[in-house]
Length: 174
Image (cartoon, rainbow, N blue to C red):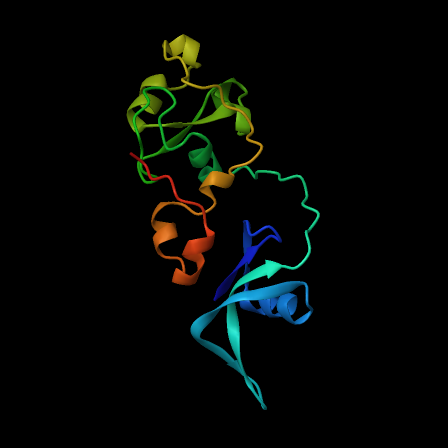
């Protein structure tokens, strides 16, 4: 079971397992906002509800966020759209294309990978977008943050009900 962590200003900043949540709560670094209704920890002398939502008591020094390179984050950066034709894609239908093909020395990095539909990826083949006559809709870049999509789509529907009030509205694919 996980616990939603809020900043001192009530912004969602992450999730932690229940053991870490208990440590934050009992050490006084975070306050209990909501507990899981039917989940308790039984000790020898008492029963304690497991935190569902905790809020840091004092502001934390936030590190400069670094968005890790992953297929999931490329999908979020490109907003689920093929960067060649613009159609909306599901995660299952999405392919990842090297702008400069690997056989031409292209690396698997933020500035060389874009989301693509299968048709466009096959049509482009082992060529650059210029050689294939397929201009990119947006240039691939390393994003600074992907905060508006912290929890997405179906994952948002499966979160504990106690979290819903604290999470931003989710943009769903059109």
